[in-house]
Image (cartoon, rainbow, N blue to C red; front, side, top):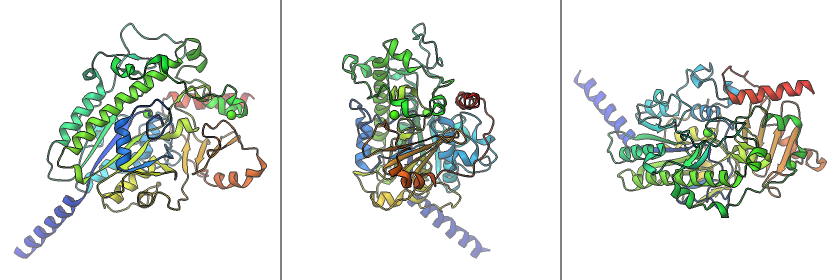
Length: 471
Ligand SMILES: [Ca+2]
Ligand SMILES: [Ca+2]
């Protein structure tokens, strides 16, 4: 009896020791942030000093992409390690727990909890219902706006679509509360390693921030994104319809005619600089804490965002503006100041964190651990980034090219070495036949049916399908 008790005690002690040696995880999410950061250079006037210093401390994945250009499927995919085409969660609905493929899986924080971690979160990590997945949840802090009596009236769009200097103080910003909550947690000591996730809402619409953040981006000197007037001439009608019909964001024509393009760009830059400030608060709290030398930090956004490129606004596209995201991984035992052009996917974060925490790997994960690229940013890497927007519509992004294939059979190919804005569709170039074939091999052949869910993203897909049948 005594021997059993001693053995048990020894086992428990060694388990605790192993757990105590594991690194903490700080996961920072920024909603709807495209490549308009200083370190990615997507806009020359982006001011993100805190995201940039995190990039300097770790590895910046310069060619990272979401699995879907919509919040819910992107986050469901990342947090379960399953592509949208594997789960059937392609759009804003359904919730991941309503997907037969996902409902019995442990999500990323739940796997860490099962391995002895204390899991905490604040803000938007999943697309709703975050409290289900963390042991402690500091509140959603969403539901911001609309501004009373000041709403910009625009005929085509969701009530969330508003921008301008509002409210008066930083303390009235929901993201500030999330940063403060995370800061207070990082100041505590824990008897176990922790997994803290902090999800910021800006620059997601409404693009509000107090006036001082707008003043850092004066409207009179705002540079509009580079846009080619006839950029869409080499796209199929289906591709145009898919990204524009029943769209919930304003039409580009309206934004231009209302004289609001520069104002909206200013608001996005201001909102991003504010979100970056909140990121800085959390990074400062970490570096001043007892956890500074034993915490892996991952920063990501759930998808990109158009601000007039290809004559459209917001997410829901398979182009670079829709899929490219910031992704940074930094940690105490990881190299600093690295950049890699190898394609990375948000779905890769799950197996990467298992690796970095020394937890058992999981063969059912559909992403790849990025640790080989953390060790050598130029390592051989044959895993292009796959993004879908509804069943049958895919983009395959390699180190050099983007190939897009739509369910009507139309295709696009862009060479990022010569065409970073994806203006010239080379899909019909005979000399690139082999390049196209190589990329097309990665288009999934086994696709889950679209699970029902009431969503605006789904409406765009349905409308483009209907238009196709009419042709
Ligand atoms: Ca989002
Ligand atoms: Ca074009």
